[in-house]
Image (cartoon, rainbow, N blue to C red; front, side, top):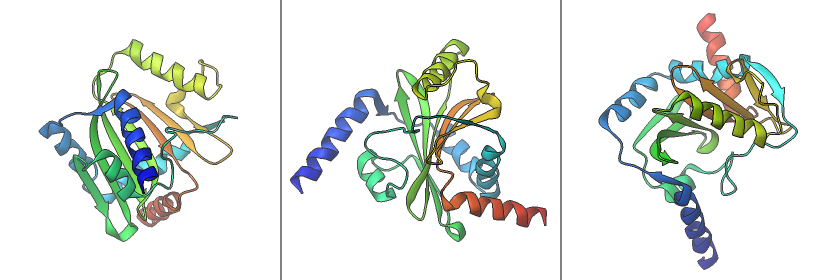
Length: 198
């Protein structure tokens, strides 16, 4: 038990050395609730991600050495504390936790998406960030995956041999999403979309 507690302490020290939780504003909470008030908004967002052109990376797509796809929701809550807001869709067994964090001085909404209490996606949405910083972050992500900086990420999704995906949205807001296409959620959202069309 002591070894596990030490690992958690090491994780927290490393995590908050670079990223720290910040007090959210009311509008952050309201925006999150509005976005996930209905399941169709969630399903549409997730399903449309895989209509983009896939670019294969030879390097595994990872976002943390301490937790990854499949991590349990209770484990995440123990590490990060209670979220600012939470969304749940019992029929599909999907939950989303939202934290407000600071990354290198930038305010960021940090979402963790779970199916059957297991993590299948995370998303960082920067609240305010200039074009130069956006380009720098994109170049850093591409370099990490061993890809050319000339790739147009607006219409593409980076994938690896494990089926993981890296998605960058650089329109009105700037967001970075890590996805697990092998998750059952892909099939749930596709089935939901087909039912809506039918």
